[in-house]
Each structure stands twice: as structure tokens, then as C-alpha cells.
Image 1 (cartoon, helix red, strand yellow):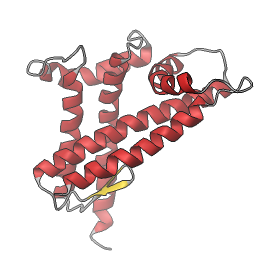
Image 2 (image 1 turned 60 degrees about the vertical axis):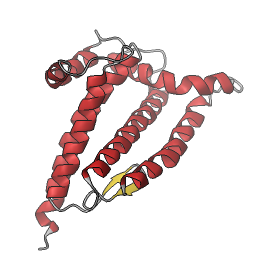
Image 3 (image 1 turned 90 degrees about the vertical axis):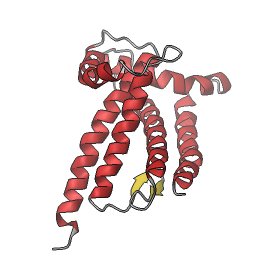
Image 4 (image 1 turned 90 degrees about the horizontal axis):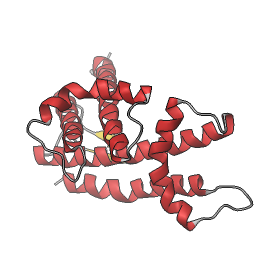
Length: 201
């Protein structure tokens, strides 16, 4: 058995645990930014799960323009720590979007730039997932409401709005989710690789 016998499962565990919590904190930031229903049961779970570290950070990091800056700082810090741990395990590179980030050979500043790229990629992915879920739910249970649908709509709506202004319904068929999904995927392809490339120096 090679050296990857234990490293690969450990990498999977570290990535999963860190990414899940980063996902929760970023969701909290987005839901607050888009004025989602915080009395929603799902929102309450997200708030309770992410409050302890944010309460400490807010003592030193004030909100800016009404946005929870501490949540973004926490996300970046968690991604950065994740990269440091993976580098300690001799993991040479990780995927960020559709780019490969060589975390094993860059400076600590480079790791921070990689963390920014990863956070942007994750944010775009959340919008993408929200749009896809909303489309699926509109097919399965149109007109019905539950806590998950409410939160999904809160996130998908800002991503769909620019396309809805440009693309009217065609024969009663709303094509904006298709174009929004395509637009987000193209945006990831255009934005993430240059940031990762910048972090490589």
C-alpha cells in the first residue's frame, strides 16, 4: 500500500468537515444580505450552528455597509486553515473551481489568494445549486411552500433577476434559469483561473 492509503481518506474527511461549515457560514451571510426569513426553521439552524465563532469575531470586526463582515472573514480563515492542514499532509494541489491550486509550493500570501478564489467559487456554486433546486421543485411541487423552498428562492432570486430583465418568457416558458446557470458557469471559468494564477506567484 502506498503513502496515499491513509492520506486520501484523511483529505476527504478534512475537506468535507471544513467545507460543510464554510458552506453554513456563507449561507448565513447570503441569507442576511438578501433579507431572507430568519424565523425560518432552516435559517434558525444555520444561525445557531454559526453563531459561536461569529460572536467572538464581531468583537474585533465590525459590520460594513450593513453586511456581516465577520462571516466573510471567518470563511476565509477556515479555508486558509484547511489549506494549511492539507499542505502539512503533503497534499501538493487542490481543485478550485475548474483550476488547480498548487497549495504545496506557494507562499502564505499565495494561500490567502487561493482562499479568496475558493470563497468566490463556493459563492457562485451556491447560486448555481439554488437555481437548480428551485427549477426541480417547481416541477415536483409547483405552488407549494416549505422552509427549504423559501430559502432557496431567497438565494436564487438575486441571481435570476438580471436575466429576467433581459429575457422575457417565451410562450409561457421561463428560460431565465437556463441562461442564469450558463452565465454562472461561464463566470466561474473566467474569474477563478486568473485569481488562482495570481496566487501562484
